[in-house]
Every structure is written in C-alpha cells, then in structure tokens.
View 1 (cartoon, one colour):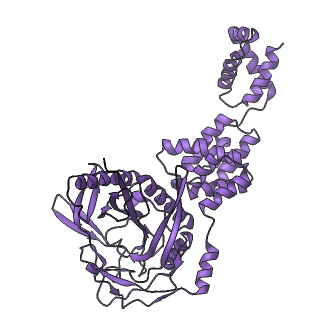
View 2 (spheres, helix red, strand yellow):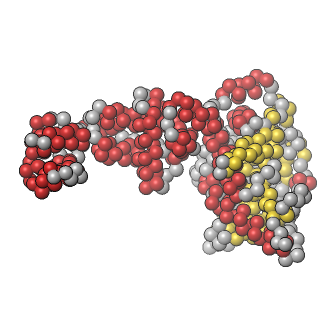
View 3 (spheres, one colour):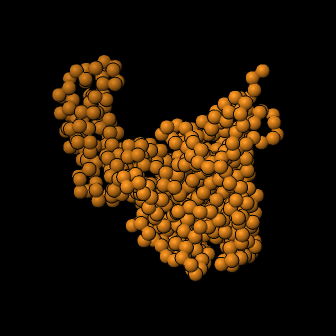
Length: 478
C-alpha cells in the first residue's frame, strides 16, 4: 500500500517596521542613500556606544501583537544573539529570546471556504543586520551598514499549516493586518516582509514531527508556493529512498526552481544568548497598553462587515477594495466627499483595476486623490462630461492626479448641451446614411447604434449619448 504524507509548516516572518529612525539610534531608516551614510557609532557597533530603545518600535510591536490576539509581555528585556557575519558589525544581534514582547496569539485564515486558526508562538523585536554587496568582477565583497539597526519584528508561528495555500493565506492575513495598522508596508519584493519556511513531512495520521528544514531567500508569494512544493517532494524522495532528512538551512533559487544547502540549522544554544547589559528592562504599564488599544484602527475583517451593512455593494467588490488599505482609504474618502458608494466602487473595480494592470502597479502604489475622483464622478452626474470623456480624464487622474475640472476646461471636453446644434448635426448624419435609416425603419433596432456612433464622432465625443439617442428617435419617427 502506497504511503501518503502530510506536510507540516511553520513560518518565521520578519517585518521591517515603518519608523523614521532605527531601533537603538537616531539614524534614518529611509531606503536608499549612499552606502554607509545612514550610520553612527551605535549602529556600526563602535566600542563604548550605548543603544537606547526607540519608543515607536515598541508601540508598533504591541499594536501588531494586539491585532493578532497575543498576550503582551508586561516586563521584558533584550538579549544578545551572538554570531559572526561580516554584515553584523557588533558580532551579535540585539533580539529577544527569554521575554518576547508578544506571545500565544492566533489569526484566522480562510482557504476555499475552509476556516482555521494559525497559532502565533511569539513576536519579538530585533535589529536588522547590514548588507553585503558582492562584486564578481573584482571577486570582493563590500559592506553597507545603512540597513544595520533598522527595526524588525519577527513573527514566529506554530507548525499549524499543511499546504502552500494555507501559508499564502496566513502571510496575506498578516500583511493586511500590519498594513492597516501602518506598522509596515510589507513589500516582499523590497524586503520589508521576509518569510523563512520551516517544513517537514510525516506519514498521514502520525503525531510525531519529521526532521525540518528552513527555506530562505523567498521574496514573493509565488516563490514561497514553489519552494514549498519542491521541498515537500525532495523530502518525500529522500525518505522513500531509505535515507534521512538532514536538519539544515536551505536557499531557494526561484529562477532555477531548486534549493541547495547553506548550513546546518543552528539551535538557540549555538547563539549563546544572554541579557543585553546596555539596555534597560521594558515595562509595559496599563496606561501605555490602553493608549495603543485606543489607537487600533478598524481592520479588514471589521471593514468588510461594515461595508456590506453600510454601503450595500457586492461582496466581490468589498473583497477587492479592502484587500488594500490604500484602496479602502480612497473608497471611503471619496464617499465622504459626497459620491455614491456603488459609483465609487465601479470606478475602482473597472477603470482603476484596468490601469493598474496596464501600468504594472499594485493597489498600495495608487497615488491619485479621493478629491479628484469625487469631482470626476460629480461632473458625470451633472452631465458636464459624458462617460467616454470621463474615462479619458480618469487616465490623467490615475497617472498625474490632475484637477479634472481644470483639465476638462483647458482641453475643451465639456459635453455639448446646445440642443439646436446637436439636432442639426444629427439631421446631417441621418441625411448622409439612408441605408441605416431604412434598416431602422424596417425593424432593425441595432441600426440606430451606427447612427449614434457617427453622431458622437462628428461631435468629437462631446455629446451626451442618451440625448443623441432621444433626438435620433424623434427624427426617425417623423
């Protein structure tokens, strides 16, 4: 009888927090900049320099903990994790082992209608390392410490996931929670959210865990899914051939579609953790905790329920709009300016989605203002412009966030409301197209569409199609 296997997966998710300065010093966290310019004695590990915790890091870590149903550690501290890499200037990393800031949380995921909880073992704060730049031409490696000391939280799950789909659902849930909190932009492709996958397999029905490997270098949801499937098959092949899986850290090469061993997997004792003697204990008192609780925004799950009750738009629209905090903000702000919810939803679901695809943009990169969208919708409602002109104007709003009223005025795009001029043009079109007139009068209703099109062309698109239809039918009925 052929054996069946179950995949067991836990994740370590590193999230770069959106603070202006680093975790233990006042250096900028801004991305880019000349190498080694966002540095000081603290984040380059100079002897005698003393770290001081950035309060904003603690606030954001606690906010994420509350949103993921964690218990908040009221009395904590930092520890030194000792390892020796060229991009780690102190030869240790300041992290939390013994008293992580958050513990015992959970988030609910939904995969094809099946809901389950993924438990969170802990969330701890730590500093990022620097960055090695490898120059193959000179066969040298250079170090940039701009990233050294950038604040991170590491979210460690329990091994509760059983498939790539569950992993992606969990990561997406975390991404949205953290983005809604404003704690990070969570862009995998830019490294502000990074996931390491711990994976093992066991025979179906077994309670005992298999030997796990850790997969690194995963910078997209697609890469994570591919790496999981590949590692699952690799471990099954090893077991079926009578060999044993080795506990190790592996690097995934997404272009080649395989992983290779980097090093044997370290355990906590290999890092020789001990309490950091330079940092004072972290005390989270009632006042601090209450302040963070009051600041917590409405998260996606709550927003979805409210949108259904308050705005009466389709669930499909709600899912798409709330899948990005940026899009949800534009939606709500546009409605607050007086636009009808369904009309706003239509512009976001149709034209915005089309242009995002065309310009290869994510919803989080949208840069147009709710004010300009609300003005455009109002101009269509008041028949200042027609639908086709509105689409043309919206393209300019999407790319350059132009003022639609000014743009329409400057480009002469207002709808022609002179009934006399419109009637004269339609009479000329009717006279020039006797075959279409004859077809219409003999019962071919579609023939009027051609006449409408010719009129709109003659009016350079600046007529109200409804008005054109009305006048045409009046003329043709005579």
